[in-house]
Image: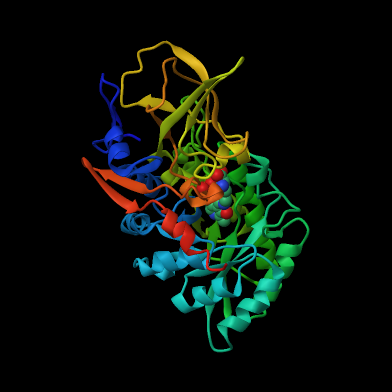
Length: 425
Ligand code: LLP
């Protein structure tokens, strides 16, 4: 994070708090979140997109404090379950600034959304139209958007590409499913269609796919206008803005994205003879990813013929991303000076499989040893939110740092927590 400072003794402080102190006080593994960095990133989005609705994608990371910060910074929220929705609303997040996503929304998701008064439900499948209309009831009203698939391949890994035709999300424009579903939505008087949505994928580092998406979505809006006289006031381009996980990696340029999307949207709408809709975006990773750090304690160092394995006290249960997407991180030694010459090592986790590798082939001081602390930067998004109970290790706590103070936001999952769900014998 921007607030990182370093001393010659190897101390690294974030938000004015030495990370080694956080590790000693709260134990390891532990996740640290820099509140100022999260807020700064929210403001960067507001500055870059002053007229747009910015919905933070809660799936990247959500806790009550995070919901409050995002609310205070004037952003809305994208949720994809009753769980995320309820956590946000019970924290005081205004429900009208929340949109509900999901390709398979459960009855509980829809009921919770209607009960709490969610701002928009994003319809993802034909089956959802009748279900939602019935749940709303004959006298009710619900604003909806429809998730369309523009047929665009973008994103950092196959598993996080959602803009291509022929996958589980949304309704394809090219195949005519989108238009067909929209006709059916218009037949339901209790559903007010406010606009089109698409989410191309995640960890996208180029502006280009977003511009193609603007063209294709406005093209569909033009056909809807011709056919139904429909003028949709909103257009949601989803999230997916890529960040650098290691020094030197590319990140999406938000200023360029804002400028070019605005120009493309104005131009496409002018050509189609349509008013320019209000833009919505849904960044998750780019808001919270760089604000988080994972801290681990080294438990074992093992030399084989070819490798040095540095084993830490966390692993794929708190960070499944290297195993799932082959993402590379840059861990570093903290808490003592790393004076020894650098050596190539592989940082592995504590879980019971060989694929539990946190960082393959990275440089650490050659004298790295048990008891050392390792910090993994850019750990704020899709780590804790994807953490599992694998091997019943217990999920790590989350500590917020700000102005020299450390505050526990989410406590460590205890053995009692893990045992408490096991109710049969
Ligand atoms: N909007 C929708 C509808 C989404 O499905 C997502 C992410 C976002 C917004 C936010 O995308 P972001 O700005 O965070 O890239 N677990 C994967 C990422 C999965 C993203 C799922 N959807 C990872 O760790 O890379």
